Length: 174
Image (cartoon, rainbow, N blue to C red; front, side, top):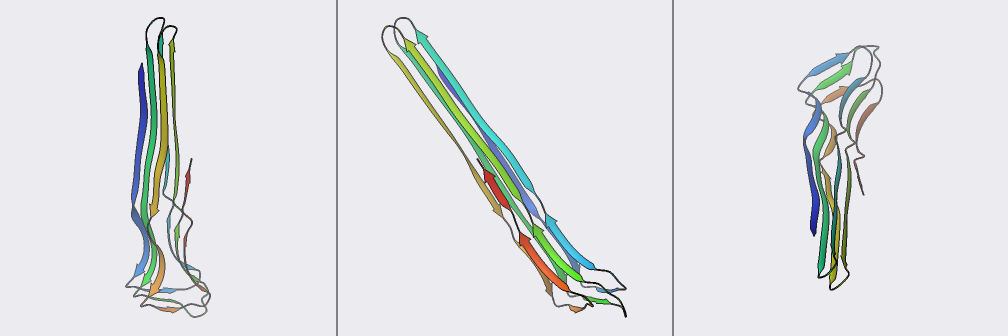
């Protein structure tokens, strides 16, 4: 008896997220100005393969082979940018507020693969042969830039100016 089982998962996400104020003039009375871009893309993949083979015989030979394979391929390729470009931002007389330009990347991949194989051969007279093999694995990749920037702009802010970019992307595989 021969038994083969397997599974393959292929997952991909690509793209970009941008928040921008470009080529403009903004005058605020009061309150905060926020240019915020965020990406929370995620992939969750489970792949499994289990194989069972049994061969029996009272007289003569018995042969049993089993193989199980599980593979997961995951690719997350996204970028995030928050931009203030070629613009004038100010608050009117007596106004209050802060300027925040922020880009956040919090992408995740969760990949779990499992493979198993069982083979049983039985022979009361003669030969009994059994063979089993199993393999599992995953390939996971996260790529992309995270940028927060202010350039070629005039800013008159009564409060704080924060330009912040963070990437807390992560991969969990098992």
